[in-house]
Length: 559
Image 1 (cartoon, rainbow, N blue to C red):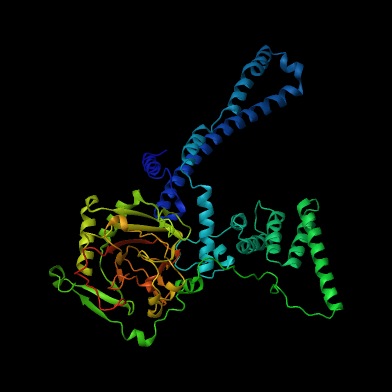
Image 2: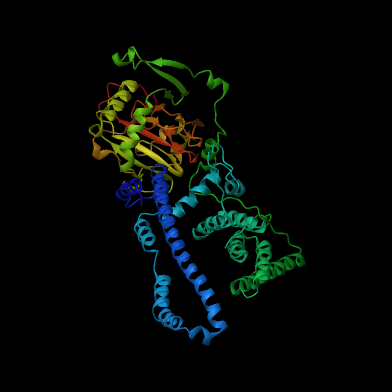
C-alpha cells in the first residue's frame, strides 16, 4: 500500500467508525479513496497470482516435453541411470514442491486489507438509504426509471448508468419496505433491460417473481396472471408461481361469477376500486399534506411570483441601519419575497471562509436530528437526510468573524443565538416542510391571518423545545449557501409558493416570529432533495432574549 493511501485510509478509519455515508456527500468522498486503495491491493494480488501461474505454466510445459519423450520408449529412457535417478527425484521432491506452489496462498495481503476496511464500509442501511434516495429524486422531479437508469440527469459531469442487477436491487429494496409502487417501476425497468439483451446474472424468473406479486398488490389481477404465466413458461418447476397462478385463477373465476350473478339479477353496482390500466399505477398518498405543492416548487413549478408581486421587490445596499462596520462596505440586499419578507444578501462569505468552515465541520458531521413534537427528544428521521455539526467561536477565528458579520447585517445579537450549524446533504438530501420555531399552544384567532397550515398542524401538546436554553424562541433564521448546486436543492415555502435557489456565498434571512412573539406559520419551509451536486449550508438561529429592544413588539399579534 502506498504511503499516501495509507495516510488517507488512516484518517478514514478515525473519522468514520460509525458513519451513515448516504446522508452526507462530503463524507462519501472518503469512500472514493478507500476504494482506490482496495484497487491497488487487488492489483498486487493479481500480479502475485500471475507470477505463480507463470511458474506453474513453465513447469507444465517442461514436463510435457519430458513425458512425451519418456513415454515413447520407457525402458530405453530408464536405461540411462541419470534419467532413472531424476524420475525418482521428481516424483519424490519436485512434484511436492509444485504442490506447495499451487497451494501457496497469495490472497493473504489482499484479504487482510479487505477485512480491515470492510469494518468501515457502507452498511445495509446505507445501501437501502441510497436506493430510497434515488426513488425520492424519481418522485420529486418526476423522473421515469429509464431516465435514472441511463443517467440522463442535468448538469452531470460523470455520466453513469444502472445495470439490470442495479435496477433489480432497487426493486428489492422497495419490495422489502412494502413499497409496491416503486417495486413495479424498477422491476419493469430491470425486465426491459433484460429483454434488450443486457448481460446479467439476474434471471428473468427472479424479476418476474417480484413483479407479478407487486402488480397483484395493486389489484391488477389480469396482468399478475399474465406475468406469472410468463414466469412459468421460463421455469415450469417454480412452485410459488404455480401456486400463485392457481390462486389468481380462482379469484378471476370468483369475479366472473359475481358479475354473472349481478347481470342475472339486472343489478348495476358501482365499482369499489378504480379500473387500473395495465402497467400504470398511482403513487400512494403519504403523511405529508402539502406533498404535491412542495414537490412542484422543488421542480420550479407553481411559484407564485406574479408581475404585481415582482414590482414590490427591490435591490438595495444594506448598511445594517447605519452600522459603523457597514457604512463604507454595505452588503447587496435583494428581496426574494414580500410577505413574509425574505431577503438575500450577496458576498456574505468568501470562498476561503467557506472552505475553512467546511474543513472544521467535516470531521464532526453527524446525522442531523429533529425534535419529536410530542416528547421533545431529538431523533433521526427519514424526512431529514443530511449531516450537521456545530461550530463554536473558539474553534477558529473565522467562526467568530462570520458570526459577527451576521449580527451586523441583521441588527440582532448573536449572544443568545445558537452555535453556527453547518450541514451537508447526502444522496437526495432533503429536509421536508418544517418550522424553525417552537410551536406554542394553538391560537384559533390566527386562523384568519393567513396561517392556513396552523389549522391543520395543532401543536398544543408539543413541549417548549427551547425552554432549557432560557433564550426564548427562534425569532429569525440566517441561512448561508456555501455551495452551488447543479440541480435541485432549493429552499421552498409551500404555504405561499416561494422557491429560493442556492448561490454560493449568498445568504437568505427571514423572521420566524411576528413582533408579538407569535409564530408566523407561513414560514414553514423545506430543503428540496439535491438532484445533482453537493449542497453545503450553514445557519444561525437568533433567539428572542437580548433582542427585545433591537426588534420591539408591534401593535398587533401579526405585525
